[in-house]
Image 1 (cartoon, helix red, strand yellow):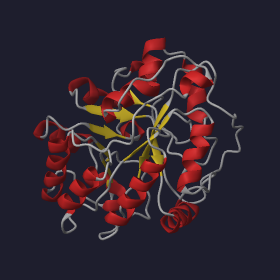
Image 2 (cartoon, one colour; image 1 turned 90 degrees about the vertical axis):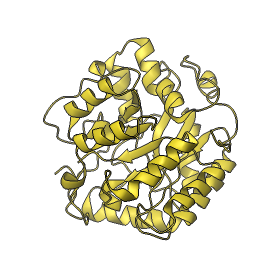
Image 3 (tube, rainbow, N blue to C red; image 1 turned 30 degrees about the horizontal axis):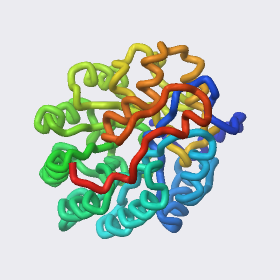
Image 4 (cartoon, rainbow, N blue to C red; image 1 turned 180 degrees about the vertical axis):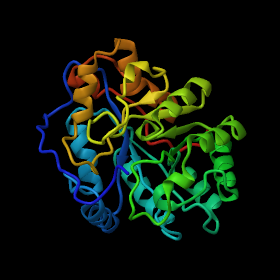
Length: 320
């Protein structure tokens, strides 16, 4: 179990900007919530995991990352109970409008709640760019009947799904057991039954690292993100060699602000990994453009000015 009370805070140094010799950066895994829910999230982590280092509100989070050279932010959320998805989606849409062209916001619903498919369709009509789900918190079975209309809605609208269905980080504080709900072979069934559905599994699929690395070799509609997996924070049974992964199916994500270490820790490690330039550019922005269907292109030069010429156009507001 990777998540437990009193986990350490790493007082590592943070830099003021994205490393200057990196390609342009899209952060594909950033959390935002309304203030009251964010306070509850921080309290949960204080009790059951680590102390979150960056205790910021939604707009502050976006400003923090953009001001440090991140060119585009993918903002994620999840409804932890029925009846709050509309509030969360409205909050996300407002942030998306405020930072038009710089933020892509993902919708959420609580799987199985009444009218979930209609709520999701409304969120897409309001401009949100896909669906975010978290099996550890929402306790859904990814192969269950409640998921099928959500998958179909995303596929019908050409929207991707970011779905935390890796077994870790697990906590005894969750009301369900991720090791029962979340297995790579269960996700493979989704991929087989919904071949037009683009799916991203965060954290490189921890803890089934090898299984998920094999799945992205088999399925062109599966992506992974790096979130926290490359930070050297969790104890892993095997080292992760990101250079061994299919280079067009892995995206950089930070999990900002819900982290116990410097915001740029994984960027520094990716810089030190010395990946081939094309593979690094794909990981830091190209694959996110493909997965989320972002308009425009991202420059690959490392200067701050070029990095800010990332993804143009408004927050998506059309059906695709």
